[in-house]
Amino acid sequence: MGVSIAPIGEGLTPRGRALLAAASILFGLLAIVSEANMSVILVLASFLMVFIYLSKVTLDFKINVARKLKARRIFEKPIVEGRPLKVTVRIENPTLAPLEIIEIFDPYPSKFRLHRGSNTSIAYIPASGFFELSYEVLPVLGKHEFGNPRIVIRDPAGLFSREIELRVNNVVEVQPRYEPIHRRGLLVVPTLMPGGVSSIKRRGIGMQFMDIREYVPGDEYRKIEWKATARTGRLMVKEFEQESSLEVMLILDTRDTMSYGVLGQTKLEYVVRGAAAIAGYLLRRGDFVGLAYASMDGLRVLKPRRGPAHFKLLMRALAKITWPIPGLMGSTPLHTVIRQAASRATRRGKNLFIVFSDLEMPAEELPLYINLFSKLRGMRSEVIVISPYTPLFEVKGMSGMSAVIYRLYASRSIREREKTVRALLRHGIPLVNVGPEDLVTHTLLRIEAIRQRLS
Image 1 (cartoon, one colour):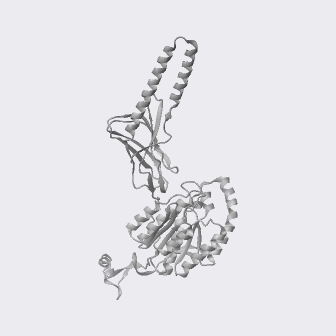
Image 2 (cartoon, rainbow, N blue to C red):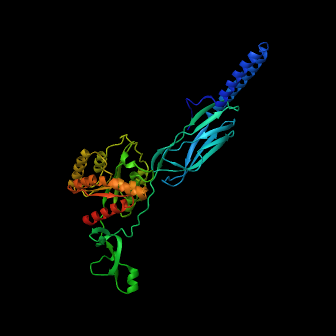
Image 3 (cartoon, rainbow, N blue to C red):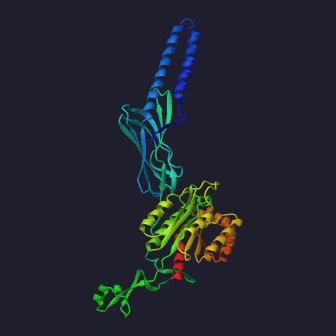
């Protein structure tokens, strides 16, 4: 909190410049027309100088009052993308002098959109009082920074002005919005069959209730279902699906290519939302989930853990993602993120690494990633590449003839993508091309297939 004087905020207003120009012309004309009556000119000039001086003194007094202002910005939490966020700037005046007719401007992040109200106002701050400016914006996921609120102070005549900035807490972290995945319907292990998707259930000791059957010698007494026993008159026991807990590391590609497109529908946003939904689903199943990504402010890796408290940590970590600056490769390379994620895995082998990346990179870099994935597989870990395919995302906002033309144009890139898919498959690394609608579904299908294999 505090106040800093803007270095270029002071000067004559247009009204002040107009007054000086008009006075100069008037005095010149009077001097030409009435050369003998110079005393009148001197009196008028003296009056004008005194008026300007008093205006400047009044402005300086207001500035001294403004130096003691206290400001803070208030947000409603939690902050979730797309949900209207109410922003309140509260400016307190602890002095005994009021501030009259000041202009307030509160700059919000460039990626946010104004939803309701206005971030500018003409204010009167009473002595020992306060003024609040409130408005609503639509936030975008990730870490963003508000600009310092600015105040323009003028003298009563409006001849001079000065702009000051109020130092407040400017950083907000916006969590992704996501739809929780209900476990029912996804508990069974999905396998891809020639006719579509079918389900395989295995009986055993696990967490998810599957059926009730009649007791057989050797069953554990703790599995007896007493209500069913009383209803049927026979001893009945619960049967469960066999489940194996997984250790999953979600690795997000946050390079600038992931942020291309229409705001709200970029690959980066869909990947972050998908990661939140998948993490919530896996943690409810009792799996261990970790997270790794690189932002403009450094590398962030969370070790795989489980439990509701860990989900909150994951959501806070996803809210700290910073948007890449196009053309500025300031973040850590993706292969470094993968190596760091592998070093933080807690098991020796049998880890599942899910890499969300569009793989839009120079062709000479692909062997580096293939070699890295092969090493992870050599350590008895599983690797899946979930690749948001750019044409599937860009065509989403198109319709009619423009969509048809774009599909024809995008078909050229399919051949290059097929080369990448074949190169990865030769080394046993599955790559799944996904669009905005099926990113979560295809990822869960792969995860449950691996769970079935490990069981």
